[in-house]
Image 1: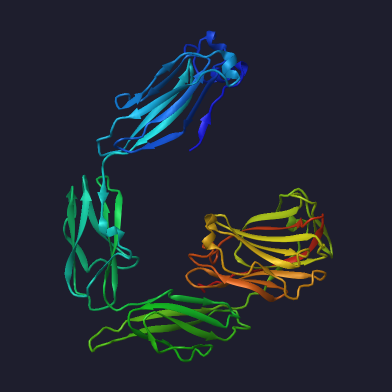
Image 2: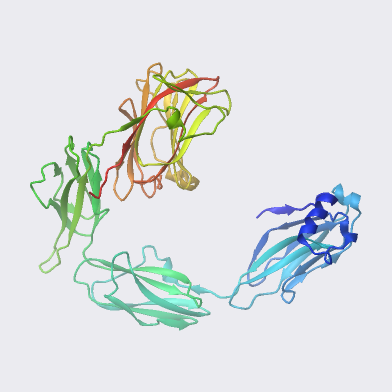
Length: 527
């Protein structure tokens, strides 16, 4: 919250403003003079229900002032009115200010409450401060703090979940993802008031481990706690049920969570374009490794099904099967675009110097020293793989490529001849530095900046809707990483790109020529 130092403008401006905001009977002609009201106070305050901390308002004006509350029955204002200070003193920031203490009575109601405090001088309302004071209502569910929730046995039984509260509450069983809740129910405590228990009864589990949730709501129907309930059973949970690989991707893997032994096999042995490296020998959590051949010369997906199967420990134990669909992409021809005048019309020049296209040569990106250079931006660029061919790269040019995604995430690759390398940098989603991938910050092997350079952002599927990102220079891999829920999480398969390309100065003014760029569309995985 910012502290506010208020000041009023000249009399002529004030008169014009007031004429548009107040009727004549509220602002009489006699009040054409300037009201110079100054105060120091937060925009809003958040107070506890009991023993709320007091706060102060520092105020000064060249006219009599007042501080009022919408709820004087539970708000105490130490001094509600004050006298004027001479105009010249207020204007110079001199003269004595008044510090007013504001205190609130205990809120013994269950509900929170809101007050508005108004700071005025003469006819002018300078500031309205919002005060939020908590009520005394509480609702605690200790079991909600158990990491991973509550695990119950395979056999039928019941559990009790304590609710600590001074209000009415209710409970409900909810399904987990695509699961169901036929195997458990609330046998007692579906509603309650004050402290109490929710009793959840569950049936015997003769199959796979299963999940549900117990939600606790307050008197307003607002969710206050959610507890995951897990009934023990056979567990065989793949990370994903669909593995996607690029047409020239020669390996893939699948992480599996299990509490027993399991195997994997092809549903059709005739699918000879891939093999499972470790189909047997798995106990507990493990990784299934897959080797593939390239899908060259095809115009359609390769598809196959891999079946995960649990191994029963005892006779009569259930056998759980999980089908996994494996899809391999087909090659897609890139579309080459020249940054001619027509193509330039689709981009926005945003750094002060416009690019210049020359037929048969390419597009010149020039720069001055400092923050004036040639950069183009286009939002809503389709997902896919992009290659940029640069030539005539100046010795002090800094050729920049930024791929930007939601939550301010950015993937950046810069050609830097002066430094002798190509650099990689990232702005993590929401500024969370833990989301940055662990790769080297630069690449310098075999680079010749006097020759044309092709920089490629290549995207392959990485499972669960994320991407394997590869940076290439002239077709040679420089670095790669996988995006995930914990690494550049908004760089997902199919996400639109807000793209920036340009040439800045790495010291002295310089330039480079973009001969062309290529776009390769992403695969239609639903064909």
